[in-house]
Image: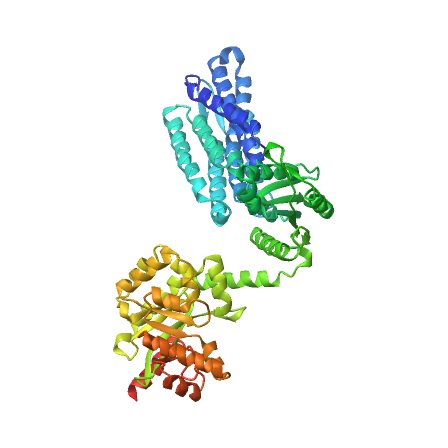
Length: 640
């Protein structure tokens, strides 16, 4: 030890000192992990400083004395083993796990905290941990402490893996990479007696500082307030600690109009001023920029009673003008929502949903006023989240059901095709209507994955039952507007068909009118690529919307499906019947195949066949049925 080159230790001291300066120079982040990181810096500085001091004392031990050196070495060794404990606690804080509240982790951390202190006190007399005569020698107690260090770090990583959804792996990869250098430096220091451990530990700390503790990563650059990403981390820790708190969400009304009419620079200045005002409340709170024109003020649970007062002060402030650039002023209103947690939300996801729902109502009904979540009914929101969760689970477990409704051919006097219809069943919710979960899936983007799962199941069914050997020529698969907006949709369809060796002619893509509204190059490109591949297209719900004839003129549809409502209306109203007859005549003139939906009785079948419909679909023939029932139905027809 006396012969150690201290260059690495001096470099570590300088690195840690620089980090301490930056740490106190930046904005303090209100998280337990931020405070624990400060302890990591302090402990790292003490360990390195004591190692330098012990090395100088070892070089002059004859003058200083062995007792004094042993005391410094005991303190150094104790801190050396407290370092991994502090680091492990920090990792757990990142995953929102409180080690001293966890029934398993708490005794482990207490033992690992007390053991180095106790061992090094006893070492002064019994030398369990180390001895020093002319050199530093580790004893069996040191290996016990090293083993405990390995256990506590391993437990921390296991706990982090258990809570992996609480953090981003991308920010941990650099940390894991530098940890390999720490392990390597331990071997180098043990075998070659080169004191690299402190420098490599400082490098890990620097990595943590840059990727986890950098205030710039959690701050909105325009307003200087904390951003939405950090709001999630901050509130997740609050929910993990079972803390109570209030949230006041402030949404500036007509902000987009202000940006357009007054200019973006004035809009930015207005956001900065609102941020400064909301961040200046004396009531203990944290402000976050939640969206383009939205701020969230999180108030400590001890001051929950002040929520209405603060909300009223905010509304009153928006009744007065705000200063703009070049001495201009503008007056605008703000919609305000107030929530109390955990009463109104028990998790961060629930809180975001509650905020969106509350603000949606506030913007429609109570613009410029205060809306209290306690006065709203969140039943619909919770039901939608339950349905969304059920749909995700069904897709993950490959339990999303596909039923088939056969389509009757007037010419062949039997089934010749079928429509694939998705079904969702939940153990608690029961059967969920597609009219409910399909719009939800479109709203949250889940429909893209759901559509691929459905097409995959249909192609697997066609392949497994050799559908080409039956009377069924093709299966219709519904496609959502959201799917058609994906640039790679056509190529994904092609790859799924090739995966199951399904011919393009065996699949018909059914597109709703709303999917084709708007001159979207992506939609048109996908449609034409599908037809070039050999897949036929049908326009669904024809007659239920506007500009349907325009779609037929500009897009390569070969099949048109008449909306069931116009068919039902034709049996109730003479004008509706005439309109239906002329519509069918026009489609025949255009040489398009016509499918009539909603056929429920013999009268409908006869009339629709007589006026020129080529195919009929409805409960008169069959409802949508599972695969085995569908196969039995078409096999019975083949026997006849």
